[in-house]
Image: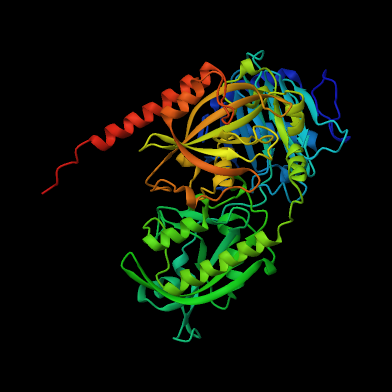
Length: 629
């Protein structure tokens, strides 16, 4: 759709609806929205979002909006929203009964405000599973709108560009969110503000809070048979036996399980990590209870055959002075392609955070009786659960297709899509995707010396001031047989931090660390000969993983305990920081080390690490606080 005077452009397929609104009203719309909106600028994992935003919904809706690690609380449609809908929806063929029930409103104050490559695939809208429509209105400063295909066919054009002017009305329909990504790129030539309204229809609403104490449960005898029914409140108050379910969602590729941080206001076990769990209503099969709780708490739905019943066990616990007696039915859902965390809808009244917890970390929590986890006290529970999880992971690994040769593995990696960087002088950080011009294959990034994105992760033993180095397999085409830190290419559209985490997990098997353990040091440009008939050009985000830390890595990893990636890493060693600096300052550098050139990298790197070691020594030298009497 386009306003009068602008050329209509077909992007993907011909559309039957084309419309515009007279330009005389556009300025009034802009001023009203700009001045009467309580704009927010949320802070995500990479800092403040490069735009302002607000999430608006129809009266009665309580759904928050989550994307990119940010949760935005809903605001009710203001009066001016009704006027906008009444003006624009007829052009989209929508009657008042068919109006959208939500709107994401973004304010781009100048060309530095942008949004990177993404899809509108939030679970609220179910756009990955069915045809959906999104209506977008642009007001103010014209901006470039880019579309690119997720899985381009050979010879197919990868990217399309539209110029969305003042009053431009556009729709994205069908399965576009599944097959395409889009963005508003950074544009230093755009000086004025732009407002974008994105109207959508919520397919899965957040549940309304109910008084769960009135729910009816079956109470059980010693053999687990139903003897009578009672309300949930009476069952927990009197300590009666009842049926309960645990659902463990198993992430097979990462050997991890999905866990949720229970909301702090929960009556029992608030602020603690747990799997999806819940009461079994009277007369309900435990499988149906599993499906219900997994759907309502995290929006995940699976066919019955995906739920594997593992065992039942009795457990007695105490919460808020109440004795809880449960017969727990334990189910596992094993996933070869687990959902990404930011794409999982979860009820914020039930949980405040989701994460994948490594099986080893969960076992450690049971061994140490970690108070941050909801732990079943019956010893049989942990023994049978971990036996089953390890069995499923072992079977999964054994069933993985074997890569026949190093050549095949290399060729497969060469087909990975990376982000081709345009003008590197405009970069602020690698996450600033405004300079990404188009995707490129990894093999082309090397053969054509294309600027692309990567991470370096240095594992730093802060106690002994030494670094963990990896000997790259001699079979590697680039830097083979040389010592280096853990590195990784950032795939098309991905952020840097998850890539850094994946790199150390894949390279040396540090499975318990989380994104919170990584410290961002700096960004730099690396240009160097790879030793493999290619010249490397990378925009590198450098991260530091300091050990030991109290949370996920309380002891310095022993070299014999590390799991090295076959065909990628042959050996590991710890090297003192002073010795590594000698390697970097030797001219020419030793051939058996990868030495990143340039004073910028070396100066900032060694300065940062020495500062961390100095602070550590100062901390351990502090006298202990006197005891309190």
